[in-house]
Image (cartoon, rainbow, N blue to C red; front, side):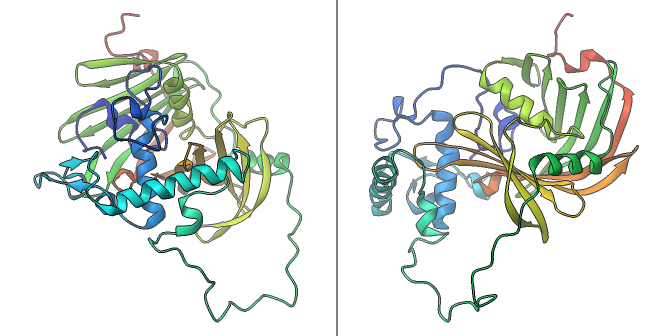
Length: 367
């Protein structure tokens, strides 16, 4: 877990695929962790997000398997530190290794290398998986299994979504959208946040806390992150990820070409059409559109790993009209770590205001 401090890494916290500040060839987790036995080939950047989701699958925290020898009680409760990650003193850790091997072997053999089962498949938030269904059984809705209702096409759902949001920004250079409000995280961590957007390829976020200011930006193909006087350029997968993050705050998301509607689910007490799209060989994007209003209520990105998918979820709430466009004034981002949950409550959204192009460039850029 990461402390809420002035480091570039905090810009990427609360994400399913935590990006490194300096883009580089992914380092295998086993390269510097000689006692790692099952997940040696897993990219180092995925190790801690994966461990958080594994803990969620069993309904436990890190100390269930790992030894915490010298916690620092001056830090926040969820981030005391002092972990001895390579210690095998706890039998639960040795059992976890065997269970992870079982999951990997089952997927590789029985399911022909498809990721069909995970730790959560059996555990469902408990250390002791249930062997039998609960009794008495829930009363069936009818004498026979209900037939699923026909689903609308992806074209229809997307058209309703665009109509519900309203006309998006035209992308006129020199103008854009400014969003300002509060960034609230567990354990009393909070700060002021300001987001600037212009066109489809310019984005900047600035987070101000009691300990300083962090910012990151996107200017066409250039992505960067800055903390005080330290600036780092990003490239490769980090730029792709930055584009996905920036799209959260645009009025209309970018439709993937292979979007398909797969079902209906309840989201915050309302029915939503569920539509999925493959972004690449390992990444799936799932969108939840309100069946009545057409607005986007939730999106979830899952990235396959050797053990279980990494997940990141964004919930959109409190839609309001801003100059003829419906925009969410509350955005909640979550992944497998409760410590990383982020709630952004916006106090003001201004559209079609003057925005200087220099705002999106890395600090000290001479252009």
